[in-house]
Image 1 (spheres, rainbow, N blue to C red):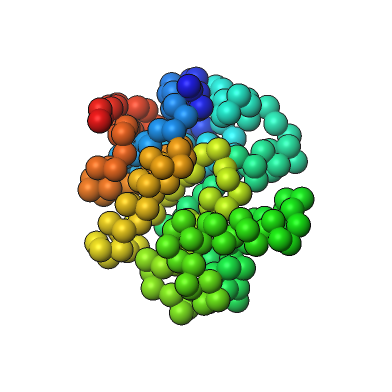
Image 2 (cartoon, rainbow, N blue to C red):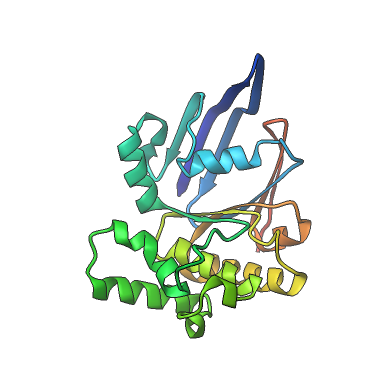
Length: 229
């Protein structure tokens, strides 16, 4: 079943008198439960596409439908509500709040939802356990390794049970061992929990876990590789 549908998706902005088009006439379908890796040189439109899928940015032209919702038509308030319900975002540099514990960082997005304290606790505990970091729940980010911080960031991204999990260079700041552990974790979330994942990466090794690899250049899709089991 198609979860994400892009039609003639274009994003243009101006830098002074210069017109910049990081994404141009992109047509793309992503199925529910897919694991997609986006590759391409810097400036090819990868992060722009990720931000459009997240509802952080809006397309200049074209349509973007995610989970049956044409999100380019939503008001700012409706888009914020849609994003909190449907999107989990994993950042390269974790973006954890240093004065909050691992538990509190993961709990943060749930504070925007109508949940009881007990319900939040159950969600946070499940998320921390699923990423193998439940024994570090009371630790602050400065007390964690880079790999552990990324696991907390992943737990925060999945705690709301989002429709789509977006990852921007999730292993870019990690050593090889930690990067492999994070990719194995994302693979399990995809295969065992059915999470739909779209990941931006520069590292060809991380694409081994994806079932579809998309190559972008100058804002256009130039190659698509689909792996069969």
